[in-house]
Image (cartoon, rainbow, N blue to C red; front, side, top):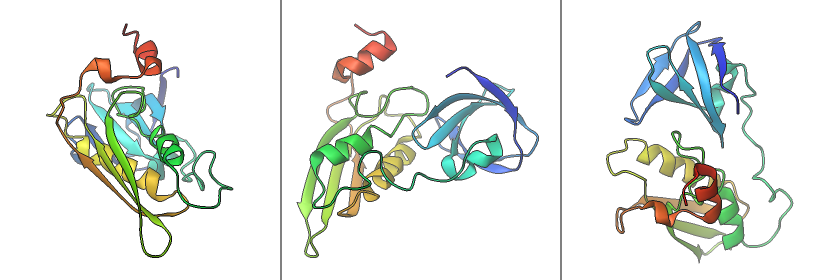
Length: 183
């Protein structure tokens, strides 16, 4: 995506990268959109700081703020949730600093689907981050949870950040390594 410089059309909430601190960006503030992946936008302010803007505030950036009504490729599926459906959804979750989804980054360590009484399922995911000090961990985990919970047949999702084993670039998929130029 080419970098796009715009002025905010209204005040909006943003999350500072990598600290995770929530701030208000004010109408008229010039920003550069550096990444638009998944359901979020990463913007750079004139002072050089990076911030993540959620889909609900995309209109402040001049973008469509309507959330995607159905997960990609699963709008017409019936029946129980499958691992393939969950993996597909997790490929829509991105670290705001790295233009690769959490699956191809190798951040997803474990995923389990448990049936519950009403016929739906509970999805349990263990994931990590590229660095333990990253304040974006809770936000990225929440993005993953929300992506999973829109799947038909999912009653709830529990996404936990774990640190063992520590993440290493060798954990990335071939596609992720190719995108980052890592051999």
